[in-house]
Length: 175
Image (cartoon, rainbow, N blue to C red; front, side, top):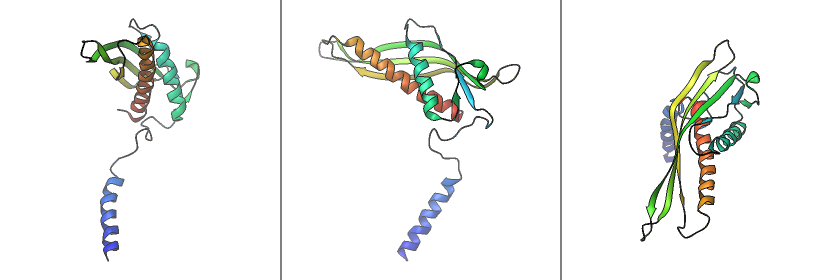
């Protein structure tokens, strides 16, 4: 009798949740079913960080391929959708210090403006937009070490990967 009660209780708790829209992140897509291809236009870089656009381009391309919802194409003419953006800001700020006042941890912030357009018709149709899509990551450094810039480049790569995963999820899920 106890097992029957637990089964009914479990079912009563699960059924309401099953139909209310909950899903695993990255498994739902709000894009129309008839779009199959995407072209990722290189983001315009308005910062002093010379290679951040290349790092984002590579990370975004890898993320779209990994997700498999849309096929990544290498030209705009072969695409149903175009993802384009502007890198507005990359900022690095110290957040932790040692007893001598030297920074031991930094936070890197990336802010972009991003648009997804349906480019199948005569005029592009805006499907998704975020004028301040941002991500941040932090990284530790030894103030006496010589590899300070290596840590910064590794953090930039990690930030590009985390940014790309979040952006692709936002585009696919519409938020």
